[in-house]
Amino acid sequence: MVVVTLQREKCIGCNYCVEMAPAQFQMSKKDGKSVLLHSTEKKRFHTIKSFDESIFEECVQAQKACPVKIISTKKV
Image 1 (cartoon, rainbow, N blue to C red):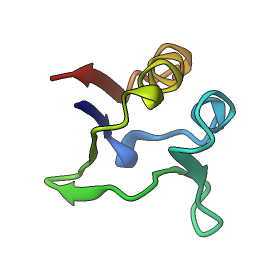
Image 2: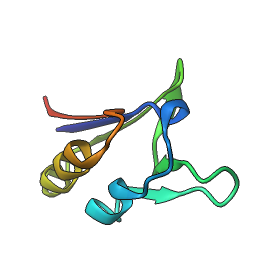
Image 3: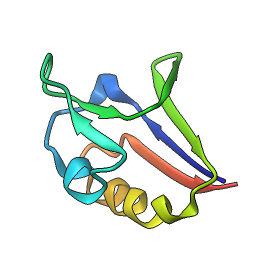
């Protein structure tokens, strides 16, 4: 299983995550911040848990590209 977490509140809207993993991220038209698609929010952390391991590499690239380091990607 792949677990991806986004601390959306700290997002600066650089769009790198969308460029690296467009199937998992998009930019909000309301506030210009990143949105982790199909995520659940708990204590300001937006998380998806996916059995599709093909998303792992793209999400790792998004994590590495994020200048404020608010994306976490791991396999569990």
